[in-house]
Length: 336
Image (cartoon, rainbow, N blue to C red; front, side, top):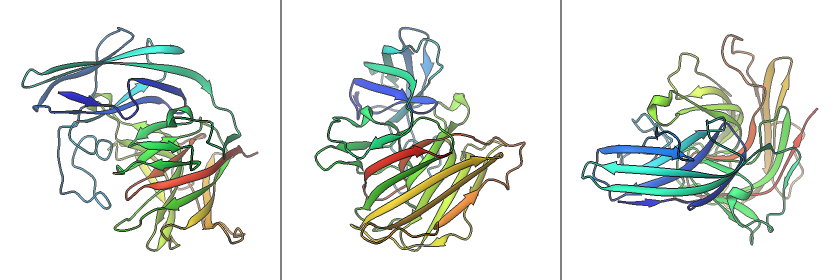
């Protein structure tokens, strides 16, 4: 048995969202897995899920996996430890996370990860227009799903191939009304449906007994189908199977056709006022003037106040499927 950790055994986290995510994969395993748990700073054992369902025939562009993890864990052996930021024993500064695995062939593996935790919120504005002074994506964001790489030479962030469904990297802390502007390039639009490229992420929802929370909560997502349209998306616990789950999306979507290897400008806003959450965005080619009108505008007024709703979200870059996307020139500001 062996382990792969995209960000190694020395990691760093700031306050971006509700959970700290430690992502990895165990390989050369004889299933079923008998034990998979972690200890934080030598405290009690806590179970986490190692994906044991393989479904290579799935088309991730259109389908979701028939697994408790839904689209959180793509391949067999994948895991995503969600460590709540109020977890007993988590401390500012250095922490030790010890992972334990045992499979049905009595193979045993223990791995120690040292990570630093800074609980202070990241204030607005957030200026990521110059990335040349950073060395690692964890210096500026937290990867929740999939994997992302920082390219300081090209001054951009790139999703890592193969892109997992709903890959997400959170760049901000939770804030209310805010705006992000950035550039985005879609490198290859072959066989792609919904792409991304950004969200105001709230958190993942679901019962702790699953060992992974599958339900997505969004304060306001931007979503592009490059073949023909764009839509906005707000949700509580999408795919969580909770009785409180709800989703609002632009219907019908708005007409927009994206092209590969074209540099686009994006303006993406969320506005919270008088109990209503509104998301709106526009996207245009870099060398033409910014449109006066918003391409898409959506709100959550159709959701009753008895359902969970949000006042804050964390700006994130996001990709549902396809080949890598490149983000650059990111600037996030608060709005009155």
